[in-house]
Length: 202
Image (cartoon, rainbow, N blue to C red; front, side, top):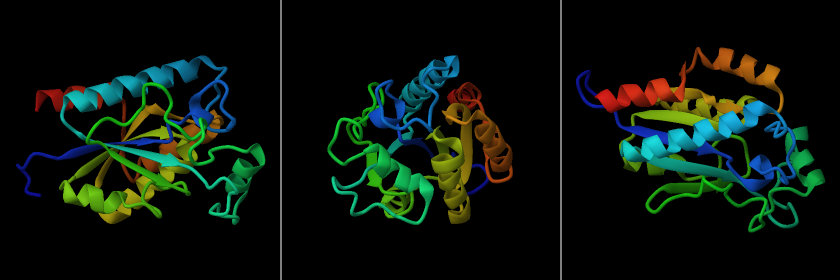
């Protein structure tokens, strides 16, 4: 990519699924759904998704889901084991389905994996390379898990990365804030409105 070449952007939306975002979802540690900030996060994320579509960006949705019997669930850490204990995110279930307003559109990338990073055990990287993407704009939840894992992998792959801070969250806001501070060394941590407004002027 030359200095004067336009940057090709993709928006990566992580884990906007019923078990994670819906008030009746089974996962409690990605989003504090009782807090005022939850509504702001979801509104900002929907707004960013709509703006990215209008701008003609590549849109990629990453979901996490597991077999009915959890035979494909990694058993090396408490985070994954907790998902099984809660009976959450079974492939094909309501809980694993897209949260309303975050359904993948026609022609958009959609990948499903069984880990935190959008790049692990998915075909996301070749799909992005095929579209000659230069910069990834990441949003979703939880910040200290899926967002951070995805950003770290993307940085190591050589992508320019931006994190939309207002479109990331966690059930643990202290961990969310700490993660954003860490990610500032790997990515540009910005507001979605700032990034999309700048893009609309180019």
